[in-house]
Length: 73
Image 1 (cartoon, rainbow, N blue to C red):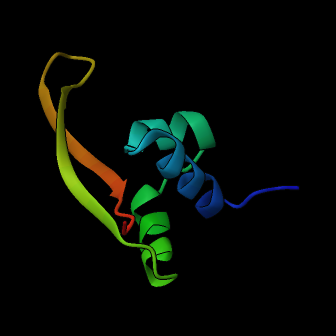
Image 2 (cartoon, rainbow, N blue to C red; image 1 turned 90 degrees about the vertical axis):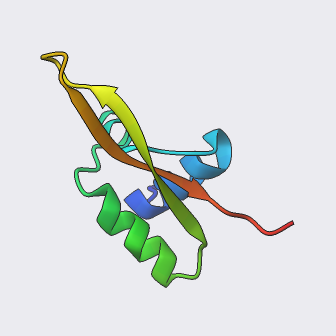
């Protein structure tokens, strides 16, 4: 069974709690994580975004989105 990128990202969110663009590229070959998150939101999933911080390969500060699935208890 072949999963779509949305299905893989949703599974990742459930298994690991969050996903960022670097994880999406390296794990799933997903170059447009924000678009897949938008697709999941349109399907009714509640996904929050926050800013992560890191450094690029030159040691310069950078920020990126970190997405989390908000599941109701």
